[in-house]
Image 1 (spheres, rainbow, N blue to C red):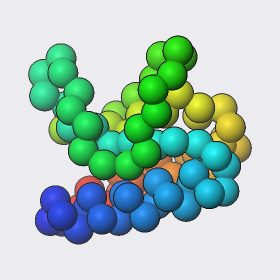
Image 2 (cartoon, rainbow, N blue to C red):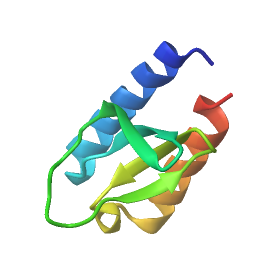
Image 3 (tube, rainbow, N blue to C red):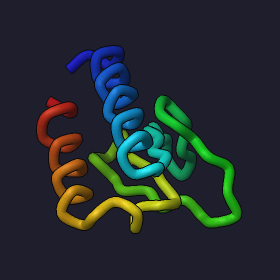
Image 4 (cartoon, rainbow, N blue to C red):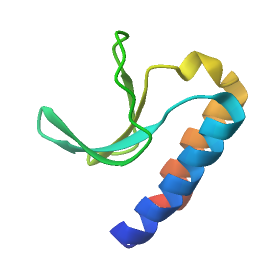
Length: 86
């Protein structure tokens, strides 16, 4: 999938998650030890953000994963891994 299409779909999904659960999600590109912001709703917080790696190049980050019900979170990560990273 083209990078622009992937980013566009991720941004729409991050907006839906923010409206539904009040959780900020952002996409980062993994560049060695560095994580570079790509898209989504980034929040500065005292809590450390927790990345969930989609593959060796991208991760989804939030410091509020616990606000998303576990089953919904699993579906979200599965969707990102299987459908958006094709």
